[in-house]
Amino acid sequence: LAKTTQPISMDSYEGQEVNITCSHNNIATNDYITWYQQFPSQGPRFIIQGYKTKVTNEVASLFIPADRKSSTLSLPRVSLSDTAVYYCLVGDGTGRRALTFGSGTRLQVQP
Amino acid sequence: EAGVAQSPRYKIIEKRQSVAFWCNPISGHATLYWYQQILGQGPKLLIQFQNNGVVDDSQLPKDRFSAERLKGVDSTLKIQPAKLEDSAVYLCASSLSRLGQGNTEAFFGQGTRLTVV
Image 1 (cartoon, helix red, strand yellow):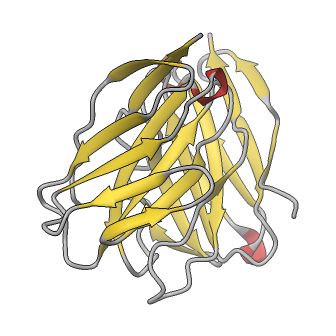
Image 2 (spheres, rainbow over the protein chains, first blue to last red):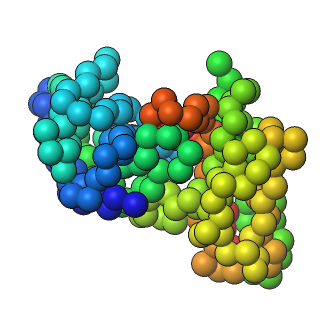
């Protein structure tokens, strides 16, 4: 299983763009990169998933360089409600194997 | 679309007692997961079912934990007897997991917070 490394915590202010980088040096050819968000007292919630280059949805963007050994989750113009723990996960492309969560990045957004 | 339902939301038991958690996944989701999340840590997979078969239970403490998924739909996770270190949130998740179509999104329930005293 590819291991991921991400910062333990980050601070930001409302309206700023936040970039959380995750390193996954041992990513396998058929692995996808997935990010989840977790608020206190709730289960994790899917944010975005990608394989290479750039993926964008209504919530975030995911940037993946050509070597795929890292990825960056970009949250545009964060608000107080984006305060949460963000998990970077790497898993096989078959969907058969469950994703492994690390400790995540605790994002604190200040007013 | 209805989400993953879990019950109870909270449970307090004494050590050495038994406890059971129930999960109803999203309709049509073939894959069901149970995770354990200790305060301050990421979720840890306990067991993964594909329909009613076990795919991965390598991290399930089988001397005290058991899980089943009857008819490939609902699932129960049981702890017997409970220890103090079992205090955690137990999360159930489900996904479509169509083979060959990349990782599919896992939908999580709100979890059951277990306190063992």
